[in-house]
Image (cartoon, rainbow, N blue to C red; front, side, top):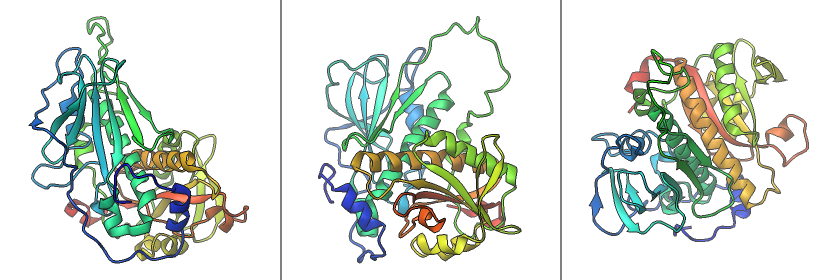
Length: 377
């Protein structure tokens, strides 16, 4: 699993990742960024009718200033295996071509000409360097890398929403190994501003730039049960973003421990009674703090007999959905932390359904805001 383009038997890899087998000792993670060939070049700012790639990438993939961390997209273990290539057409500040992106330096490297038929605008293609995640997680790495890729796609999608006049189109169908996913950005719309209705502020579902740049995974503990209306809003975001690929529910704690899901009318309804969080802690690589989390959102599905495209699709969608749910949680004053590693987590079987159909794919631990939140790095 050391080479980016190495073919992987995902069915076998996922079955092993879901098993109780423990990873071996850590190995070197290698460079944090792929060594793109050729000299680096800056990203000119966009102009009227041109796609602002500089701002788009600063809000989604660029490392935080001075920290060297690849933020704002989260990553298992902070290892960031996802690499981005830009396929640039006409109407962009960069000349048409294919470019590799360096998020540490916010620079691009020209790799060659654009493919024939490239439309105006740009597409960001996402692939992975497995060595980074394998270095710590070993055989559990592949589902984590797919989740990370879904998170990055969501970060790009949100950044485009901030730009306002660019409609992002994510490709999360799981049909290809390289790239694993992509997000397409058409040229900005050139509507006449005089003829458009003027609004005092952007719609409520459009994030502010500071929200994307400040997003962090809050360290444990994440205690305090979220209000039901807020938990419902977080679940609703995840349900919409999952596009029907996965089922969503949440395990909540006191005063009434239970599993809840979103009802058609937008309210929460009981899926199962009882305390699930200690079991979730055991399933989530033994992270005992999860047993005390206020709530844990769960994306589940991806049966044992899923083929490779379905495995990719389910995990990409799960990362995408949890990323958007995370932002919704933060906007409602909650603390939140994605949980990606799950072993023997057959939720369906635990609820009395047939086994091997409904495995936990991703999670988001939630709590009410606590004093340590502002100290998060």
